[in-house]
Amino acid sequence: MFSKVFSAAVIGIEGYIVEVESHIEGGLPYFATVGLPDGAVKESKERVLAAIKNSGFYLASKRITINLAPADIRKEGSAFDLPMAIGILSASGYVDQEKLENTVILGELALDGQVRAIRGGLPISIAVRDQGIPRILLPKENAREAAMAQGLNVYPVESIHEAIRLIEDGHHEPPFHVNLTEVFSKNARYQLDFSDVKGQQHVKRALEVAAAGGHNVLMIGPPGSGKTMLAKRYPTILPDLTLDEALETTKIHSVAGMLQPDSALIAMRPFRSPHHTISDAGLIGGGRIPRPGEVSLAHNGVLFLDEMPEFQKNVLEVMRQPMEDGKVTISRATLSITYPAKFMLIAAMNPCPCGYFSDPTHDCTCTVPQIQRYRTRISGPLLDRIDIHVEVPAVKYKELTGGDTGESSKCIRDRVKLARQKQLDRFQEYEGVYCNAHMGTKLIRSKCKIDEQGDMLLNQAITRLGLSARAYDRILKVARTIADLEGSDSIRSAHLSEAIQYRSLDREFTGM
Image (cartoon, rainbow, N blue to C red; front, side):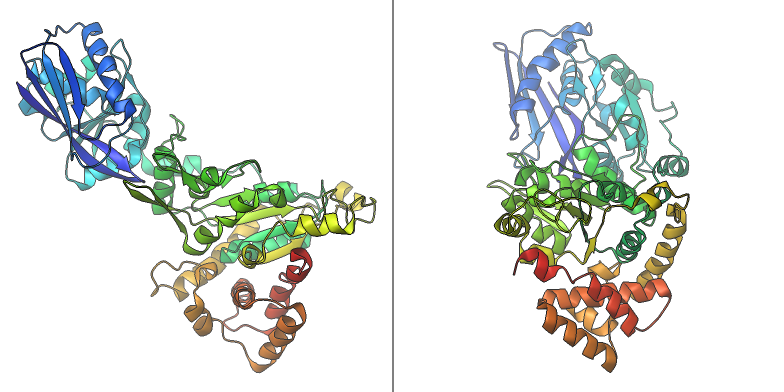
């Protein structure tokens, strides 16, 4: 007795179809699962048999063999429980094999036959749709995210009995439907606003420039100056996520198991703020079966590193490659997985270990060697990859109690959108380049041309500050963004001057 059920799994953030083949024959009771199953899949035999029996189905003692094809790819997770149970019931005569065609089945089983949520519902649904399979049965908790794959008939199930009913005569029932436009607009609402921040107008300006060009930012200031408050509001001035960006971001969170059951789509740019005790695997991703790390969870959004020098140095250094390439490749002996990691870095640090160096209202208790050791925890190569450095002084009492709150996030975001649109028009012929921060050396030379006066100004700055060649490129990128915010087609000396001041802390904060 043989049956075949279609299921699916995920590699990285992409889904693929898995054929669950069940073979039952006489002999001593035996249950074997083949096809490179991991521990969770091997343990599923206990869950599957108990769920079948507790659902009221009778199974005689037989030899049961389950094959998960393709057999050369390791299968992991508990999503194969339900298709294995349906396959065994089909081979036992409870389910018509012909009605299993054109249907993909997924779900973890409880011992009483109820179906529990799985990871990766969205990438699997997109893969099923792209394969031309019209119907998918999966847990109720995953139905909303799966319905984001427009053009696929999604049927939520809560038990084995409901799954069998939908297989046998559910073709005429309406599939689960979600209004994509409504979900997108409903979820794209921020609770924070830049007008909440008193004072710090020059810092807001720096963050506006960063948002307009997709640049990384380092804020340096004493405790309580508003660095964290500003960073948390940074996503509110970024351009809205496009649908493609939202789907890609949701896929990553779905694979990581971090998508809430009532959240079908991540429509706001993610904001990730890991603690400074995080490991390099937690930040970049990894594990025996590689999972996305914080840099991938921040894809299309913001990664905020508060108290940056407190992070372990090896953890900070592993960020250099994804900051340049916009992706992370994790290699193991059996497979290699690439996760997208195109994020904007917002980092914050104190000027010294006690936090009050150069603060006019507090005395610094740190010695010169302590300050030097503290500052050199951020390497020169990593600092070069941060386009904008800005000092955040303590807010004065007059500003704190004043009624002027500055511009709202919406006003700033409108200017950022105009600047981003100029960049999209400029780079429409170049694949993978969407803002000034993505420009490579060749594009910088062609799109960031400066006049003779600007060249003299930049030469003096590079010579006096001892900036690196990468810092030279960063200055041109930031100057190009400042010009875009002003609506200027050419980079003028004023734009270069503002961009240079955002690099003036290089020598001071690397201790070189």
